[in-house]
Image (cartoon, rainbow, N blue to C red):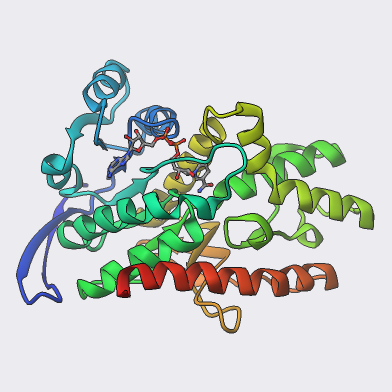
Length: 338
Ligand code: NAI
């Protein structure tokens, strides 16, 4: 049964605001960046998700067309359209889950870090609004560089006095989806039953597939492990190159994003779900944010499950990822703290 909870909180500014959040069994999802390459197919998947009651589409351009189009689908979710900063408040009001694919994607030759200058400010501004309007909503950040945009959002929430590390997520599901597709194909496994944890972050050497923990268990030669790991770490670049200037992964990302949102909704509604995601974590010394399998529940991260026993090769990958993650995290924190 649906009911709305009222939360009164004091922001860091000292201003007391009242926020109403829909804690219903049929949640509201706000999609920020809804007109983009990811936003449109992700909006389609969320509109057709029977667990979504309300879908708020927000972008700085082209939202009315996307919303009109999606609203003609005969599924339950009620679609609303919001364009530009003046309409951001209405998009966020009452949201249980906020998904952020707003920002520019890579072109051939670019790293995810090259996107920082444009995307850092976009995520900061959206996080600022979310922290003020719906501080308890789960926030799923797709915008790259994820290794830095998650710390940016966290710092904004801290400045507003509402940071809860269990509710801010970097979406790394696409790395898991890709790993499962590649491993199942190589080993002739049933892809629907193939599980590959991916830990670390979401760029190059920080993406660490745990091939020693594949389920159902599979044997890999050293050459296979090295080739698969390299392909998974570079899979985003494979798509960027194939699209030849027309952007990065959008369809597979929308699929992955929809899977992650469903997992958050499962948690919200009391169905246990385990997903890998990049969150504040102390599993690796000296790194403040790290992705590992997490147990999700009504309050977001219920338990950080860690990464279990690693092979010597995977240990070496973690060591290689640490300095890069530290650099990416520090860059995000500095962007807010100055
Ligand atoms: P896109 O350029 O097609 O779409 C981005 C959308 O964001 C546009 O509709 C644009 O109008 C909107 N936007 C820009 N500034 C905004 C603002 N201030 N508020 C709201 N909306 C705003 O880009 P695409 O392909 O959808 O990629 C989006 C982001 O997702 C990129 O940063 C990309 O690198 C990242 N990405 C992340 C992945 C992951 O695994 N986490 C995988 C693939 C892409």
